[in-house]
Image (cartoon, rainbow, N blue to C red; front, side):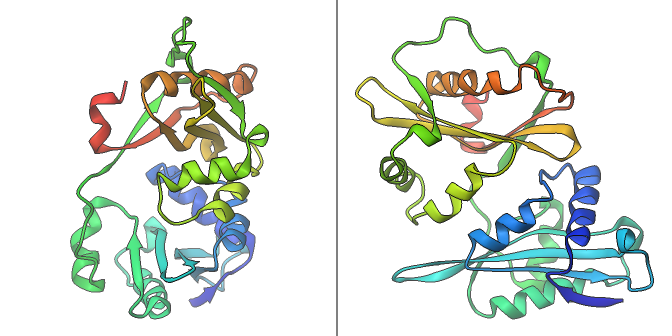
Length: 265
């Protein structure tokens, strides 16, 4: 076994294939390039079996990103921490996580992971604080997703490329206080990603939505912001034409915070 940082693409491909097949995690092979280019620091830490064929080397791994900003401390984020099922319980994942924590040191770090593993992460690595809400998830069969025919005419949508970049960035700052332009623009530009921006009559932005094709032949909303349900309907209606003749047959994956449960329709 060998601990490596930023191994070849095929190792990342094995990680997202396994994590998608067993946990349903939503990724694409090109995410490896996106993360490494969009963030100020990126480390894919993996334990590999050097005696296996290249397409079978992955044992355990995790991804760490660093996001810098002016006049504030860097933010670190850990995700995609996963151990191949046949290797679990043998200690192969611990060096992976420890290496990521060594890089973080005493920095501010958030962990996105399976909820049932929270006690272990709290005890072993000190992740004792949790958000006051959960990230919820729903899988919808595309043929069962119905959008009202008579949409509210107060709102319109445009492809993100038709929108003034400064206006979109200003709106995004109302959602996240850290400027995300250098992250969200490359995200919009990824292959098989479709983004529309919603406007009210006075041309103020009232939401935006990205839907992209992910592993296991699925679609995923990421991100999806709407000021109200009518804006959400317009955004989905604006994007759906991109998939009318699609070969996609698997689920449409939606995520939202639990504080919005009353609006999940």
